[in-house]
Length: 203
Image (cartoon, rainbow, N blue to C red; front, side):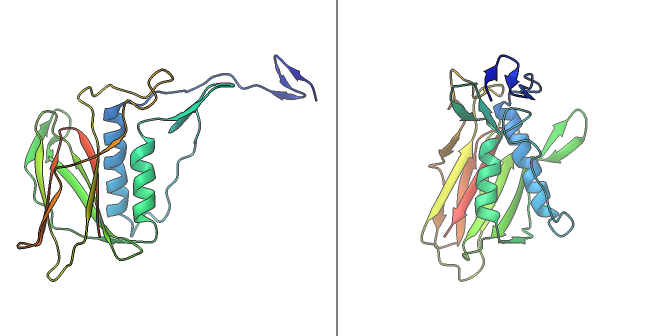
């Protein structure tokens, strides 16, 4: 069928609707929600993104142009990759509180751990503080042997920064060089920037 301005054959071209642009803050909130889903994996057996491209979606495109990842793509993608087929653990989390206008005091850090399908450990953590970094420590089980720690952080000093057609990689995951393993104490330490989503893969 021939292509017309209205569409192809009898198939109309949909108008541009709900093409929301997501910010760095949106991605951190999204990552925080992923942590909550994992913490309730015994009750939430399936979760999905209803839309994938353009319409309230993690991927954007332009007609005849490029495609790029929105900020929310990154916590979804990395959590799905590391947690798939894994077992959610119940860490004992201790964190300072932050005060919120709507919910009062909440934990400044939210986190969950997953024993990955290959036996490695993934820890997902969000720092909810608007202005202070958090020094995050993970006490590993007795006798754990660690060969490497890969830490990735999503953070931008501008909470409203977004990935756009003109700046497609403004907000992405970056290596967090502060991550370190102390073999003597069996502890992994990492600094979490304010308003950040973080993933640590401990092998």
